[in-house]
Length: 221
Image (cartoon, rainbow, N blue to C red; front, side):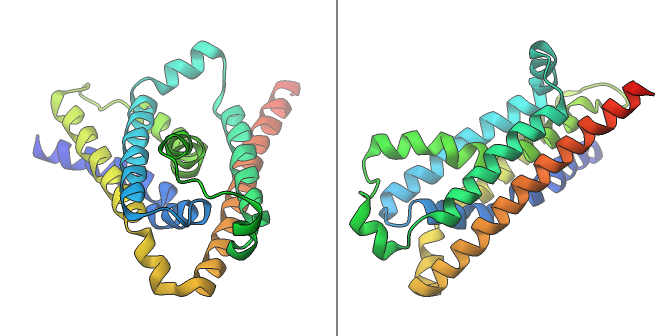
């Protein structure tokens, strides 16, 4: 029983942690909301953590059924998600520097603004994107050999708690990283990670398109 529990936890964490990448997520969140206070950042991290837990749990448990109900395939999910992620990365690349932003746009400090941004785009698709959702759906459809048991449900809960705790810690203390890197270093890191986000979006888009093109070829043959 303990072996099944540990296997469930390790499979989910190992499959989703590299895709979610909480440290990179924290830098992206920092680039989008660089001037909020510690209390607001803690509240934002908590909301992103809760939203991520809900999306991952839904993807693991009923994600495949939802896609089937609406007639959406995994390749189409990847194409649509890749477009959204790529656009988010592009917008971050084109965002003005802090010096320009302070003159041209107000800083989002209100609780309503933070709550609105906590789910979209900070949780979906920045933190839990189409790649993480697709992997979670694939993991959810792989039933254990001897059937689903309570120990597997406990393993899923612990695995998601570990993932969301890592997201919370990284986002919550992103301000400390900003102070460590300094203004110039933070701007360089933000631009680099924005480009990485853009590339990830293009990669997800291309993966989905490749699968759709391959399915068309199979249909023609």
